[in-house]
Amino acid sequence: MMLASAGSDSHNIIWIVLGALLVIRLAVGAGRRNRRQSASAPVPSSAPPAPATASVAAPASTDRATLLEVRQLTVAYGSKVAVDGVSFEIRRSEIFGLLGPNGAGKTTTLSAIEGLRRPRSGAVLLNGVDIVRQPAVAKAQMGVQLQSTGFQSELTVRQVARLYAGLYGVTMNDEDLDRALADVGLGRELDRTTKQISGGQQQRLSLFVAVIHDPTLLLLDEPTTGLDPQSRRQLWARIERVRANGGSILLTTHSMEEAQALCDRVAIIDHGRVLAIDTPRNLIDQHRDDPLVRASARGEVTLEDVFIGLTGSEIRD
Amino acid sequence: MLAALLRADLVVLTKNKMRLILSLLLPLIILSTTNSSKATRHFGGAEFILGLAITSGIAGTSIMGYAPMAARDRDNGVFQRLRVSPAPTWVVMASRLSVQMVSNFVIALVVLVLGDRIHHLSLSAETYVLVLLVSILGSAVFLAVAQALVGLVKSADTVQAFGRLLYIGLVMLGIFGASGELGGFWDTVSKWSPVGALMKVFAGVVGPGTFGSQDWLSLLACGGYVVVLAALGIYWFRFDAQ
Picture 1 (spheres, one colour):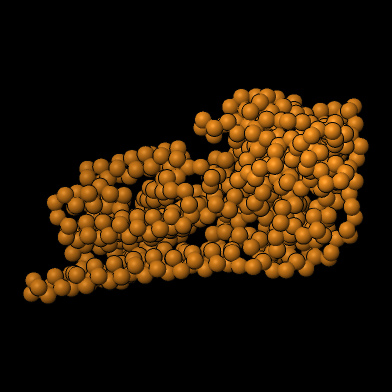
Picture 2 (cartoon, rainbow over the protein chains, first blue to last red):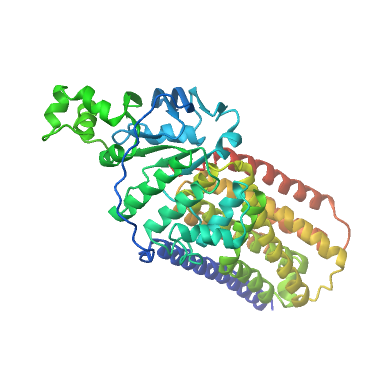
């Protein structure tokens, strides 16, 4: 009798243990399916091709008021100083490029301006507002496009736009929102989830939510990386449009062609320090006769030659 | 801001309904395999079985639902994208946790109704309210466990692997502890583990008689788990995967 009772009890426990294992097995299967879907090839873009209009940088003017002021910014990861006393200003309606090799401190500088990383010392002032002391006020004035698009894969394009409109306090009815998304070539993708759209479409959505509240400063971290020439030119045109509407843009890029075509001024940084700041034209003129620049030039000196002359030709990780 | 975040997080929750269904599977197995009076006695009574079923459901959705999803979103830069908006980080996290609490509450309610039917408990409306209130405490306990997990472990894959081990470990501790088969030291460990303590509180509000001193101590232990694990989870948690 005792044995029978013990046997029955053991059966109950075995059933529960098997049940727990089954739940875990099924949960793991569901997780794997989700990851496979995220990693699967994106759906080809159905947006109409953009006109391939080359963009020409506007001449830099020195009389525009300062919008962003970065003063002696120092950012460290533990004992490693990634940004070491960086200072620069961005004027209203200016496109400013931050150039540097891998690990130079571009993204860290941008992270401090975005409020993602607390500086060890120095200050970042946007329209006179300190990003450390009043982050919400400063963030409401800036639009940000990070290197990774960073949207929840379950949300549709429309839901993502609705979320960020809500976060920035932008009131738009469904029709206006759909029309605005159609204007950036996402009209056919409204009900697709962010994992179902192409990389170019994700970039467009990312830029759309970055400018949804008409920011005074737009921060773009390597915005054209991985884009085809058509998408890149389309993005340049959008950046120009933001500037035409009175916004200023701070972007990081590895493309000297992009910096030369788009930026009013650029800062070249390396090892966390600013090496030079000026217009691309002035930088070329100033460093034309530098022996290291001449050594890297193949024919006429370009911004890329100046960049290599200042930062060295060794490969960075 | 909070409304926009809550709406988005609810959409994500509804699109992951399979996780909710899976979280209900083990509680249903527990309730149905312990239906006989002998099995009920073996686990210390129907109230303990109901406590175990609700606890395993809440633990499942928190440890194998909330934690891996938070880790995945951290890996994909979702938190960083939200942090560059004017929304304070506490609002971002509060929205997620609130939605998870709702999901846990739904699980607790479904398991409670089914447990009441299967085990013929004929619970009063007052008991229903008390059990659902305790389920909020249970949610807090296991969300604190999940937060500590996602704070301590960085990669999403590792969080998922650890989560599985932790879930099976906690549930086994609860099952064997309730059956009294572990004996001595492990029975004590089981009794004061998050699962054991919560089961005791559930049993206290469902079972006949008053809420005794042991029940109050278990309630205190649950509160301790919430405070300590949530504090560690918040301290360890990084929004950036790198």
